[in-house]
Image (cartoon, rainbow over all chains, first blue to last red; front, side):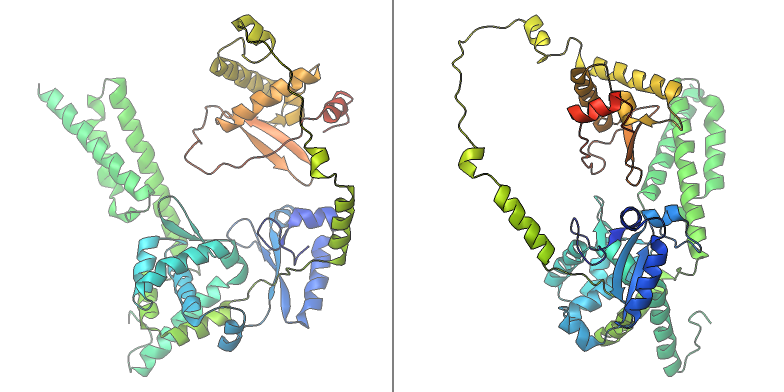
Length: 183
Length: 274
């Protein structure tokens, strides 16, 4: 149930597991998660609300969606092997970081301008459309971009921002400037 | 004369406030560009001049939009206090400075792609073969229907009503009455402002039930009511809105099929269908 795609989306809703396995399904998922460790995979829970509850109730779990994702991280060579060109992946990283920094919503035009700095113009629009098609982004009628289900399932948003900021600090340090950008 | 001029000026100011607030609500302007205290002063200043209902309406509309802006300001403050907040300028600076390879390296540390399978199983193959075996050939399924010869004639409105091609009331009026009925039923038999779908559409005869289900679908499509589905309990509730909500064209609608079959109707009559 977790691996197969239904209605264009992989994963399974909590209530479907509830129905198939009974009310103890969170325990079954814990056991499965433990088992998947040896395969470097994990069970990922994405809650309906943006914030992850500390102690989720059964009701919140029923409404959540469960996926199996890679537990560890990939190397650039491995990313290429799973079908991503380095430019496209960098574009995705920049787009996601930009949207997170703007409270989860950014005008498409602004994102395009940002990507245009490093990617050829003809490719920028195509890439954004592709990210939307894959489920990483969502676009509304006002051409505003949001993070969609796949980003919430696959990307550790806090880790990404922390990594970006710490990389900034390192760079500033090496230039002999204070580590606090405002300092 | 001077009072009229004041009123005109006040109306223009309120209009500008509303436009500004709407731009903020559409996220095209920073919510903190609006000085709430100044706006309240303007609204207070002109309030004694309003006598006409349209002006009072404009005043309340301005207050309503102002409240939305205050909500956006509060959300902004909340977001800044969360661990996910990052100064967009700082991040933008970082993004423009970082090389592609560096960016990839960082992203890959935070990216855990979903693992999914796209392969057929023995079980689904066996299921598909069973289905194929029971599937009738096309020529048997699409048998040509012998078209009965019908003489051309005229039909009166009453005949069309009798054949249920036309309703005996104007449709919108019928829908409004049905909406009132839903609200009354919810008050009498429902809880939490909703009622089980079958308890509302179910009627003495199957024909009437289908007719009611047909009307209920319009109540939902036209924003008079909504459906609340509990998949685990397999329960569907219908919930009336106090005032109709204009949904058509403003948001993407989804279709929810509900089987109003003769068997389900019989079960409902016997109290076996929740």
